[in-house]
Length: 178
Image 1 (cartoon, rainbow, N blue to C red):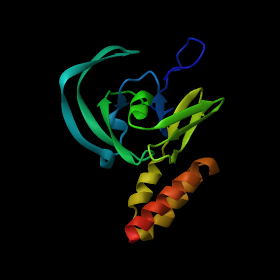
Image 2: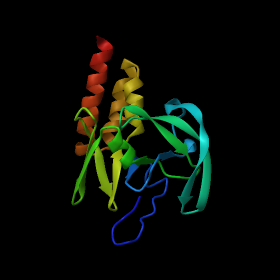
Image 3: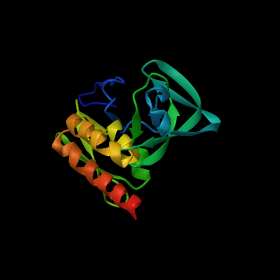
Image 4: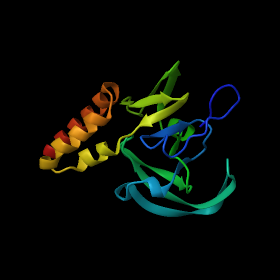
């Protein structure tokens, strides 16, 4: 994830723990499987040819992708596993998949292909997809545990972050009830 002024803002796993960086300089989605909820990790695929990445630690050769469910996008993405890396979504790949991105000042917006607004925020001049692992837990919670899960979600988020996520939950609950 790059910043302005010719320098780079290096993101740690801790800085991106509450969301995935949206990186216009990343050609692929990247994740560290150690930081992912095991329930969100899907199939691994061996690539026909290795992918070589230039990282701050030097050149890294990767030969495997993994499908990772991204609660903030409500879908799985094919990611390269890079141990020790923060979770990064390639903004270019998202645009190729029909997403729209806009950034003005200290606000950014991401819409999916259907025009639905995806919660984002800007941290240190880096756009970040708002992700709260509680949302994934909430979407799979038993009805009797949903209140406690929702309470934890509310306590950890601002009103701006919470509103679209509650709408997602209510839509999923309604779909399951039918």
